[in-house]
Length: 205
Image (cartoon, rainbow, N blue to C red; front, side, top):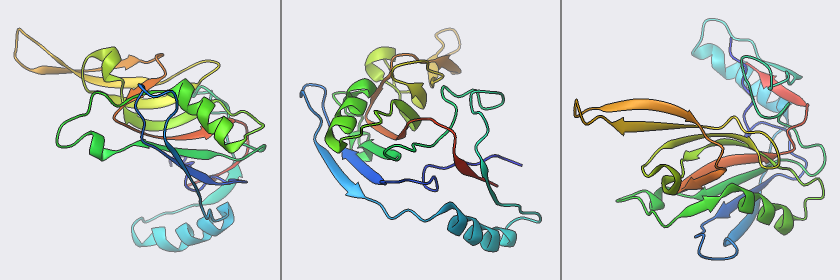
């Protein structure tokens, strides 16, 4: 059984989607705010309970308190996925247009600046600082394309990782490496949830 707690089904008080298409050359990122209609966890539970048995022999879906995500096997930078103050916020940064047909290496993002601008733009009095999600790693830090597994508190610890393919001169092949990332930066595209990282209810599937 896997513990699943998606930002798409997490309870939001003020669900918002931010679309940011920035360049670090500008002091502020162009930003668009959109409200989202987010169903309750109970409603999502009922839908999954009806639908998943068509694909799996055994299915169990329940609304349950979130475990402490700082502990094994999660090893997160923060305890939970809830924001009882202002609600969680989805940050949709950059996009595939920055990746194809060739990566646009000028699209560089500082996660601290993204969080600061989102908090100021939305007037979030709880000042959330935790980010969880995925995107492209900072090419200006590692000198190549990489995959970013984002799990960080801007004002605290980070358990973010980057996955890279390192060329091997002696063999002409590439070696897969996973490294800790404490840069709090990204490039090209990023999809993360901004949260207070506090305990709350989640879906267990």
